[in-house]
Each structure stands twice: as C-alpha cells, then as structure tokens.
Amino acid sequence: MDEAEAEYAELLRRYCRLGFRCQNIAFGSHSSHDPRTEMIREVAVNGSHATVRTVSIDEFGFEAEYEYLLACDDGQWFLEAVDYVDEEGRYPGL
Image (cartoon, rainbow, N blue to C red):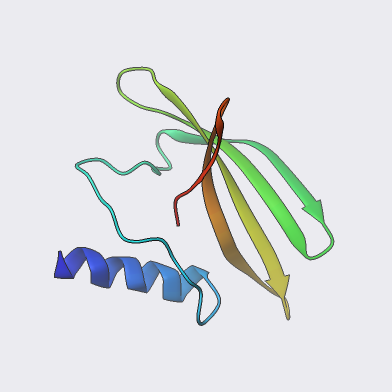
C-alpha cells in the first residue's frame, strides 16, 4: 500500500497543481488508464480550459468512457479531474 500511495502522490505532483485534493487511493490488478487500450474521442479547448473525452476498452470488450478536465495556468496545463461517465452520471476518479 505504501508503494501505491507513493506512486499516486508522484502522479499528482507531476500533473496536478500544488495542493490538489484527490480522491482516496484505490487500485486493482489492471489500470483503468492505459495508452494501449484508451483512445481519445474528442478534445475541446475553451480558452484556458480543456476537456478530453476518451474510451477505454478492456479485454472483455467493456467500454468505459472518461472525461479529463484540464486548466492552463502560466503556459502549463494541469489535470483538474478525471471522471468516469456513464448513462447514470459522473464519478470522480482522481
């Protein structure tokens, strides 16, 4: 658990603003986000904010949709949220 928490803290330090308030850590045997299985569907930029919509397809063919919310500050983009999205709602995952 200590190693997972340290890796999560490093990801947040690298991609989020200092002081970002994250969700409690949870992990399983396979990552939900993998560049080999997650594809970008849409990118929308509005000034200093951006939304990236993706779909991840697992080994069983299940399609999970995600929305990444980003903000640009002083020329650097920061991740503000990663939400799992389905027909019932949005669920924070960062």
